[in-house]
Amino acid sequence: MRSEFRVLFVGNSYTTRNDMPTMLARLLEAGIPDMQVKVDVLAFGGASLAAHWNRGEVQKRLAAQKWNAVVLQDQSTRPLRALKSMQEHVRRFVDEIQISGAKPYLYMTWARKNDPASQANIVTAFQGLAKVTGARVIPVGLA
Image (tube, rainbow, N blue to C red; front, side):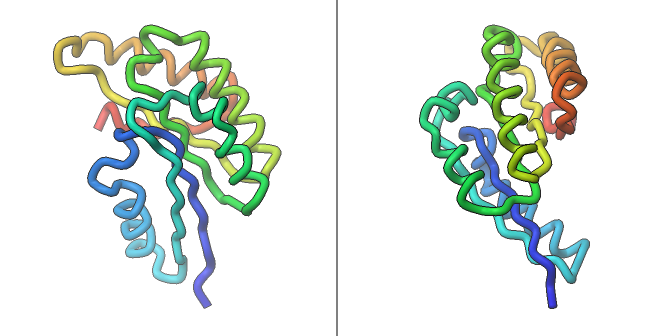
């Protein structure tokens, strides 16, 4: 019997583009044949974690189902332009995720084409968040 691994993705189009959650599920299943990966996505265009927090849907999903992992992806410019708000909402979500028994992951985005030098600041912001919250960083922006 295949074990089930459940992942909730929270973000915006950076998360949903190319059906990335399903692609990740298929890669995991190919590498671990006795695991069935189920994904769910809460995302809308341009969404920030603050917007997701205020909507309350993530909190409802955390309470309603058992998740193994939750991937948080904030609006791409927030590490540069709204870091305090990002830090606050990441901490809130990580607390809720850990209380639910899931592991939190932070989806690191990438610098805009017109500002490649900002990637260093994005990396620093995510490293700080990981250190403070204990969440693991998925360094998509460095790939």
